[in-house]
Length: 271
Image (cartoon, rainbow, N blue to C red; front, top):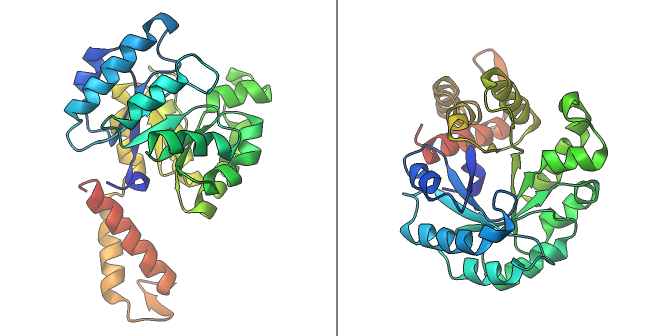
């Protein structure tokens, strides 16, 4: 599966063997084994070993990644070496504010990097980060970004809208994938659905998640529905080139390309 086709990207503490085993039964498109925020300092080494072992077993065709700790921490260097030798498809780098951070990790790990944008500096540097060597995608880190901007948690996401759209623009200009941030309220199904719909409307490819119960909603909202796929197939079949009428609207080459992309995404996720 191409990274841009991923709808649901599930963070799991790399120290939680039970959660990792369960992930192999879930319909998520990517499993991200977290060595950073989800793991206390005294468990970092054990978590790293567990992550490498789990990646060796694989995740049944799902994309996989490891979120490492940032440069300057005691674990950064050894984690890069471990990820380089692992079966991970990607390495996730938190708190990115400069393309050199991505380039340095890529040069050691030899794996494409997904950069987390978690600060005002990161948002402003997003175009350079996205276009830089080794960068395969961007994650919104909305919790840290909200804190950096001084937006209270109770204020919702209105104050983040410019930052989110800026990150989407940066990714699209560079031709890479981009994903919405996590939703923290585990018992708020309606809120999750609304946030996924908002992220989809802003142009994100999918959503990062923190609980298995969130996977189905993300897949439904970010995945093409059957009616949209059927419409796309009819449009491609009807198109003969140039501007023309199709089912009461005007279409041209751009619309054919959009339909083809929609079908490719549906086929990638098995819909």
